Amino acid sequence: MLETLYRTHRYLLEHLGEPVRRSLMDEINWRDRLIGIKGSRGVGKTTFLLRYAKENYSPCDRRCLYVNMNNFFFQTYSLVKFAGEFYRAGGQVLLIDQIFKLSNWSHVLHECYEKYPMLRIVFTGSTVMRLKDENPELNGICRSYSLRGFSFREFLNMKAGTDIKPVTLRELENRHERIAKEVCACCNPLEYFEAYLHHGYYPFVLEKRNFSENLLKTMNMMIEVDVLLIYQMEQKNLNRIKKLFFLLATGGTGAPNVSQLAMEVQTSRTTIMNYIKFLSDARLLNMVYRRGDEFPKKPARLLLHNTNLMHVMMPGRVNKQDMMETFFQNAVCGKHKVNIGDRSSTFILDGKYRYRISEEVPKRKATDVVYVSTDKQQGEGQEIPLWMFGLLY
Image (cartoon, rainbow, N blue to C red; front, side, top):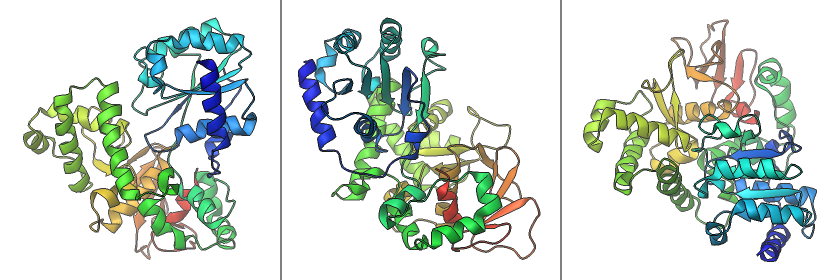
């Protein structure tokens, strides 16, 4: 079987396209022995693993091997035993896709780590997985990272042929005028922004298939496979959680009416809150809390995870302000804590930085608020164009 998997590995590398190089590739310490890459379905985890292999090993180099736990072989053959065979044959890096398909995956990884000290393992899994807090045997030995969908920066590089580098939030605040001039010297970002909001977040935009139908299929798989499998939900509850998601996705971005939702879905308030958390873990929703609050309290606002989901769930009916706030929240939440704002702001980041997302910027500005303008290409002073927050990763 090892030879068969080598042939598959070689074929996949030889036929791998040249997608956008993800910035996460340079953030990972690849010398670590056990690395977990989490990401929602559809963000390109498989391509990410194969891209790493192609950048560092030739397709015929037997020191690196990609395997997918979808292969029925691993239902009857121990992954620990297989890793040992690969290791003894000179293998150095084992890339394991969809590790959560194994029921005892955390124990298997720990055993491989202990038995094969010179073997490096990189594995992918769903965002619904808990790598450390629910698997103490991985504490101290596993480094975990999150792979997200395309940022606007990555989408812009792909579509406009640019080579824009990511910036930090502080750099954006202090140098946004200069950064905007540099970007605009290469392209007009607003020409691509609307397309990104509609269909730019998921890498399968590169595939020659209907994007909306592909995304609908992916969303259903997130619930039917990832949520049900990992949380071990009963099949009879599938329609309830799907109905809840539709009600939340189309019911506005305010605080959910948990009692009303419980009546409509015909379940308890506690179950509704648990389902909302599951949908958030699957990266279908974003829960935004007031400062000091957290789950299991009710969030102050519920947003869809990204704007592409909005266009699929509410085609032709997307509220522009909600869409811009969804984009901003999605762009910053990877590296910053996002809370609901106060009277003068839409969001508060990291407990102290205030941002107001608005089409119209007031003439009298509060000194401690950054004003995010939704339609401008170039900002000035406290006013930063919204598209620029898509440069953060």
